[in-house]
Length: 94
Image 1 (tube, rainbow, N blue to C red):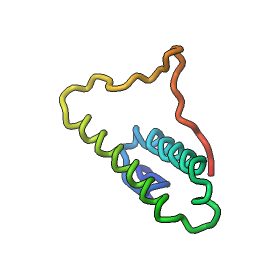
Image 2: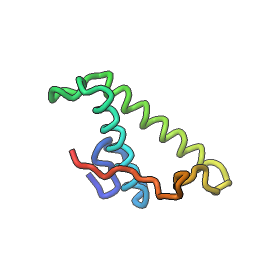
Image 3: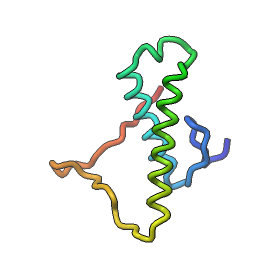
Image 4: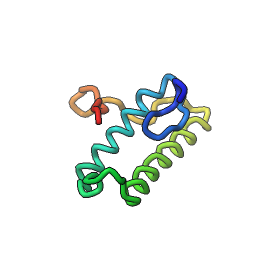
């Protein structure tokens, strides 16, 4: 695995985006564990979990490709909440 490969999905990611990419996927896994704890009882991951994870991954790739294909590089989302605190992507281990 090279330095630009996501340890969760195995996809090559731009080096400056790898940390964000990995943290988003960890957040998705936490959300899936909270909403569907039965999927994480055994070592074998159910197909429903894989389908959901892959759907989120593909949606993110589609959005990123759409943003990159336009010449408008202005921010599309705010990175602060209404209280003017920085939004956080969770840093958690497995």
